[in-house]
Image (cartoon, rainbow, N blue to C red):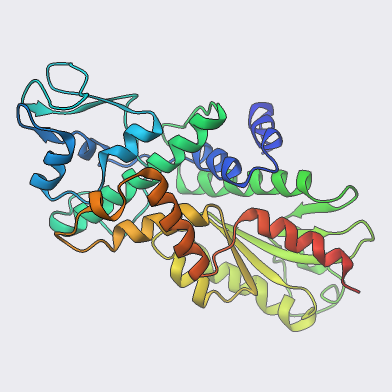
Length: 324
């Protein structure tokens, strides 16, 4: 299904801003977490948010949310500028809606697993909110998307982004039968399989085959079935992966069967990893005292893992035009 005009406008407006594109894709493919209420921590009267973090042994820093534009109120509805005026749960404006990022930790999880998941979700929400707020981006976040709908929307956004980022005359084609690719067209073992995304330059040269996977764990058998004939009969064509996978991002970077992998938001997934790895009892207030410290830690982690973003994918495809 073609992208709506408002979604096309969001992508086109921010083509050259890598973090904005990450924010647009993420916001449009939103998947709500049922644990967003974990942000509503209980305060004692005359207690600061930081003191509550230490008392509850939380793995996230409230300053991440306030730096992103969220405002905290105590249970009496009074703005928390320092200490709370009443005991009870904090409420946030705007409403805290975290992403469901980790399928490995159940909603019912307790203890350190709950701490890790909720803290990492709040970290990514803070980074995402800061990205859209500082750019004035307005995104109508979906209330519910099925996994198939999310994967299809990610693919369509990716195709539109690439088509508008690559040189004039290049084509970004979806679901091309493998038998329509030169070298595979008369092979008896190719069958009726189709490619995910093909990138073709202005001279008709097949530059790369690209698989789009919002979640890396999905459809790996189908993906392998596509790759076998392509790598056998067209070994000159690189096969790449674009994904938004979080819990398996490190495995993707190190073990993916594709020639190259690209992540929707490498810096944010790096921050997610860092928060996930915070030991029980360690303080996020000391480790990441600001949202900027968290952001820089994520970038450093992504660079260590050689996680590259969609902007690098565009550069790599463009540069292939100079290869004879």
